[in-house]
Length: 318
Ligand code: FES
Ligand SMILES: [Fe+2]
Image (cartoon, rainbow, N blue to C red; front, side, top):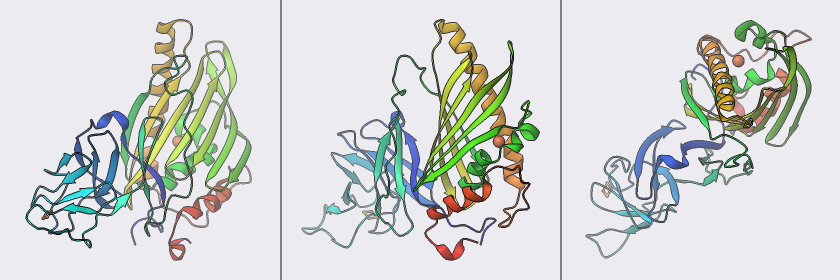
């Protein structure tokens, strides 16, 4: 057992941005505690598979090449298709039907490449939304940043259900007020109000968090008159105690492009500062299965009950 009493959750997790690979590209990566190969076939279709060739174990992401709709192993040139089947052994008349590569379902949404991870290889159980703001000229392109943090996605996500820490860790003016917290299958929604100190004085804005499983959330921020922004945030477990988080901000444009850019940059910088403030807490805290809460704390217990559905191995959930 590692630092946290949880296995890796199942769900859709971002493994690349759509522009990261051109057709024909192959990359080695590591998520879910597994070595993976991510490749794009000559038709532009993305594939995510276990890295190790079932023949004699070569790493397909290191020296493997794309040929049409197949990946070719660098060791003895066996070919595998996007379903994981061995399609050709160049020095044999027959293929080996038992030689299969574990293959992860792939979903493209919002210019992210998501792979479906389930420890028992169960089929995807929900979809992810496509946001109309992505590619809309009324909105900016992504302002993106990413961090590797020594924690698990659940602990990072719990931050959203913990309004009190914003004042003490992030120095916000007041404690955000949670208006509603609702769950619906793999989705959860928390609507809250937050006060901001703006050039015009203290203004009440919104922070609305929409989670779609453990790997993707949409957070809408409103600071009246200044910022309407989405953060499309992806958390991907690297192994059982480290996580890659990708923040991708879309900011609604003002009439002046210059003003938009100034505001967007200041806003994105502030949220990125918040991640850096959270990091030492996340990297050093322990997980308390039975926390001692204040009656004015956020919906932490409800959040944890909702999140528990993403752990396949019930025995590990406290
Ligand atoms: S190890 Fe891949 S073809 Fe032999
Ligand atoms: Fe935080």
